Image (tube, rainbow, N blue to C red; front, side, top):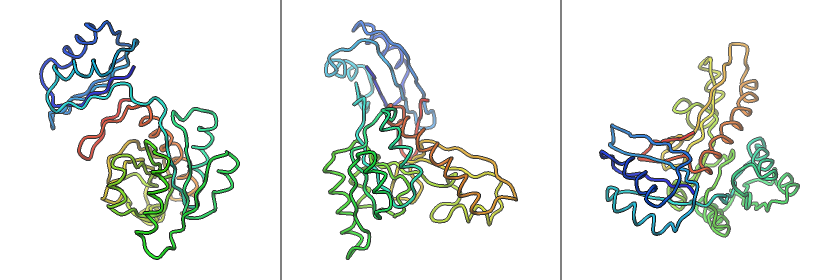
Length: 275
């Protein structure tokens, strides 16, 4: 059983929580906790051996914790996801392989693409593919069609696996903190389009990738995972793109594992990640 709590910090929270679990005869296998002193915020994730009526445990914990406490007990162990794509295959291919071998901690319900380029690989993995062209009478019609298709699967998360379209605030608001994007840059550097060309022209010695939740601010949502790799003056833009694909795949895979395992807490525009 997993217990996840986020609340205002105060003296004695760890003792109170562990005491209540002991009273309920629940054995704590592991516990990760963190206090954000600047925001006076407490975060904890507990892995508990036994199970109990979660409504009763939540009620008992609420009596002990600050009134702003957000408590989640036994979140869904295997999440449902829908993946959005354009033409680039590397991130989607990795997700589909992990899904096939059941190492994703989630199940891919469907893939939605604004091109048909990646339909064949979805067919090979027996995953429904929905083609929704962005060349419609308006962006609103395009996004409405995507939103309705997503909602038909009722997913826990939507993964933007190199989905190369900017989403409107109206669309994002329908899936608050449920949209996960992989950005081909070590944010906050080189936001927006063509980051590898920007990096090449700047003569950087490191390139990277960032997985983050999508908000209304382009490429500025809460960061889940990041990595960098070294490059040098011999790297062309093409070389950087090739190297970048490898790190994009790795960063997105790591971020999805953390989110699907309920190890990521979001507060304001930051995350607390228990790895």
